[in-house]
Length: 285
Image (cartoon, rainbow, N blue to C red; front, side):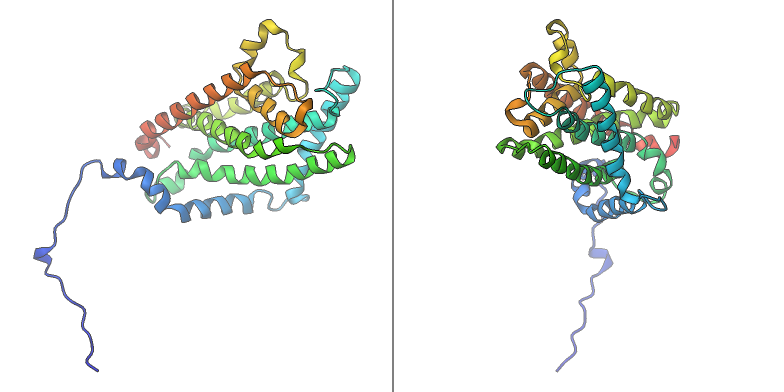
């Protein structure tokens, strides 16, 4: 049988096309092309998250559980604040702890991802938005583990979920978009102004108390509901409680609409600002 030889191409017949702004035009397609890099970065963050810790992934359970206990004792028992409907105070608090812990962890990870990945940025090209997006996967793992505590609490109090629980992925997606949009915006500023890396934890701590994590939105006076609803986490927490508590949840349509609007605006602005500053990251870092 005759051996087949590869067909040689005359170099003079090859055409090299230099297209201006090709990277800009192919940017969103490159996100799919570099999906393996995204998986590698996400797995790296998950693998090193609790390495060389005594409790390991148990910290994902300990932190929200202890926070729920403290808030239930202080606000539910000592301050005697009302719960939503007939829902146990502990479940109401934990239904808010789930999105808040996810948001706080994701925002911290995304806002600091550019400084952490500085060495990688200077070596190879890839869409830089992959790096902050990959850090959120670890937060999703923590969320899934914490959700197990909620299932145990609902079984303990014999509080059965309803069909509304099927809407929980939607509200989780809203938290993801919010944390990514705000995190991308902060990360672009952090590259230039490193002081923001110290300010973010302080803002998260304040945000926990101006968000209805440890209390019901029913205690907020009606005249402050609009201003209160400008905080996107208000509508998100109400959405989570609506999905988890069922008919016991108190939902303000104004807060829901304001939250979705603010999240959408921050997502667009965050991605736009990140893309505009992306070319200068290596020089500034």
